[in-house]
Structures are given as C-alpha cells and as structure tokens.
Amino acid sequence: MSGVEQVTVAPVPLDRLAPLLTPERVERLETYVAVAQRLLEGRTIWNINSTARGGGVAEMLHTLVAYAAGAGVDIRWLVVGGDPAFFTVTKRIHNRLHGVPGDGGRLDADARATYDVTLARQRGEVVDRVRRGDVVLLHDPQTAGLARELRDRGALVVWRCHVGLDEHNEWTREAWGFLRELVEPAQATIFSRESFAPDWVDRRWLRVIPPSLDPFSPKNEDLDDGEVEALVHRQGLVVEGDALPTDGRVVLQVSRWDRLKDMVGVLDAFAAHLEDLPPDVHLVLAGPETSGVADDPEAAEVLAECRARWRSLPERARERSHLVSVPMDDLDDNARIVNALQRWATVVVQKSLAEGFGLTVTEPMWKARPVVASAVGGIRDQVEHGVSGLLLDDPHDGAELAAALSSLLTDADRCEEMGRAAHERVRDHYLADRHLIQYVELFAQLMGEV
Ligand code: UDP
Image 1 (cartoon, rainbow, N blue to C red):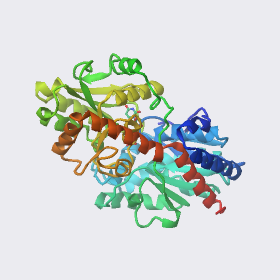
Image 2: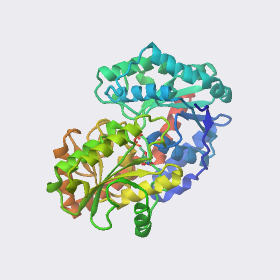
Image 3: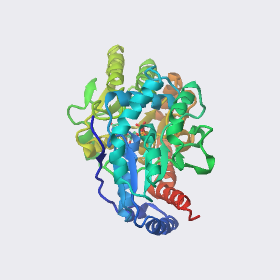
Image 4: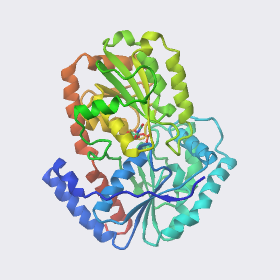
C-alpha cells in the first residue's frame, strides 16, 4: 500500500483554447481568470483522488489542473493510496451508487473500519500540506473521509461526486447511508447531475458541474490518417481475435473493464445480430491493461469474462470481433492509441448500464463520430437523440443496439451530419472554459464574495 503522492502536471496556457471559442467566450473566460487570480491569491487549490491514471476523473484532472496552473493559479493534485481491501470497499460503494450490488459484500462496521484505517494512515500527510483558507476538492467516495479534518484545518472543502443513478434504489440508499457522515462536513458538493444527489445534500451548496475534455491533449489532438493507421495496427494490442482489419468498418467501445460498461453485452448483441449488420463491419472492444488502474479491482475479472465469452462465440462472430488491451505504462501513448481507435471507428458505442458522465462518449463526439449510447446518467445530457447521436432506451436490449448500429452503418450522410452536430455539442458545452468558470463561481460564493 502506497501513501500520498503528488501528481505533476505541466501548466498549459488557456490561450490555447481561444481559437475554438467565440470572442464572447474568450472575453468571459478572461474576466473569470482575473477573478480567480484575485480570489485565490495566497491560497492553494488541492485536488485529491485515488488514481493518477485510468478512468474519467484522472482524465479530467490532467486537463483542468494543467489549464488552471496555466492561468497562474497554485493548484496541486494529490493521490491517496490504498490496499486491495480498501479498493474492494470503495468499488462496492461505487457500484452501489450506480444502483447495483457489485461484489455483494456488506457496507457494515467492518467495511467502515477498512475504509477508515486506510485514510487515517494518510490523513496527517494530507492535512499537514493544506493551509487555512486553501480550497480542497475531494473526488468521489475514496476521499470523502478526509473532509472533516480538512475542514477543521480551516480549508474550504468541496466534495465532488462523479457517479450516480437518476432514480435511487436500495443499493444507492445503502451507499449514501455509508457516505453521509463523511460528506456532511464538506461546505459544498458537486454532482454531474442533480438527480444523483441524495435528499440530505444541502441544495443551496450543491452545484451541477459536468466534466470537460481537452481538444489538445494526446487523447483528443488531431491525428492524420497515417498516424491513426500506425497506432491502431500496433503489434500486441489484440488479446482475443485476429489482427484488426485493414479494410472494412469498425464499431468501437472503449471503457475500463467494469461490468457497468457492459462490454459483454456489446459482444453478445453484435454476435446475435451479426446478420443484420453490413458484412464489412467489425467490432472492437478496447480497455486499459488490467493492472493499470489502481482503484479498480474488478478489471481483471471482467476482462477474463469478456475473453471467455468471446471464445464461446460461433466462428463467424469471432472472425469479426476483437478484444484490445491498451498498455498503461506510458500514459500519453495509451491516450494516443485510444484517440486513434476513436478516429478510426465508423460508429462508437457506449452501452453502459449506468454512467456518471461518460467521457468515452464526449471524446468520439469531439472527433465527429456518431455515437450510439445508453440513455443513462450523464450520457442523456450529452447526446440529443437523433441529432448528435442515438440514445438507447433500454441499455439491456441488444436488439435495439443492433438496429441503431444498422441504421447508421447504412447511411453515410446521416453519420456525417450526426458527427458534425456531435462535435458542435462538445464545443458548446464540454470544454474547459465552462468548467473553470463554474469552479470560480463556486469559489467566489464560498468566500462570501457574491
Ligand atoms: N480510457 C483510457 N484508456 C483505456 C480506456 C479508457 O484512457 O484503455 C479513458 C477514456 O478515454 C476516458 C476515461 O478513461 O477518458 C473513462 O472515463 P469515463 O468518464 O467514460 O468513465 P469512467 O471510467 O470514469 O467510469
């Protein structure tokens, strides 16, 4: 078990975004940067989460920390460590906040003790670094247990939750019961959707702030066709199936190996409806190397389930489906491979059973790819059905997925139009300027400025 680590992120000047924004947006951003510089003079903003790589929170922090630092703000990012027992408990909470039991274990006094002991070991190290008046952004359940001491230290503490379910059930209620006393000391909370928040969260200090992506990061920067081809055909990526096709079209899902992303469900739907799809279409399911995401203990098991399912498919389905494991030893390289896969795909799928936001939807939308995605959680905010992508009413329905894919794969004009609308949607709603401005507004309110 490792302790607290600081992640180093190189500052990026905010001007880089300017060519993508209208003059009004640039001006508004400049106004807020000036406010931030004044408000945050002599203070540090701390982001604390539990992994530096893999998953949407790490992805988003790399971008935002870089831009905020580029704007002259003293912003740092700490990662708390944990042993497998801690991450088993936090993954259980994560699953339950998405409305499913996960590993079926209990969130009882033992689970609380496991959770507490891990954070107790690191609390001193975190609290010592933070000064009175600093702002601390705690991300997700893994770090909620730091709120009370940080508040006692005199910091302004915000807990940001990136997961949730629109309609609460017995599992979400249990997880929120576990988290309540940990979260309550925070002065404010941030959710990706308001419906995710339990009743007891103080609405006056709840903010809805969806994530954003960085168009210039290795994950999203432009790549030419030659670069895309070279990256996707890199040796050693495919773990089940033939080498990726050099002709033919590709339907892609990229996700962590998490049951709620339902990679197996995509594979099943593809295999069951193979005959309804054009004959040149292949399926690619890609996820990170399973040892690469520190706070996700289910990954190896879920990948193993997918591999077993792939092996059980009829030969004609195996010939046209491929499981890809993207190396995690070099993060920029990992990002470029994901970028290339998203650009290479004709259609991108996200058949999640629950989703906090889903950067794996935003990313292909930015790349002007049509997406077919479940109408769950934050995906519903991103995709306007029939305009910037297609939404699936029932995330469990493989036939609905296949029909949506088929309708796009037989209509190139529609794909192009949808891709264009998708790109514009991300440009208008999911870039860093909107995200940073929302943070500054909240900080100003916390400091009593407005
Ligand atoms: N991702 C990645 N490498 C992979 C698989 C996923 O970098 O092999 C990234 C993906 O591009 C996205 C993030 O992990 O930026 C996943 O974020 P999302 O919000 O979709 O879901 P989460 O994993 O947070 O549940």
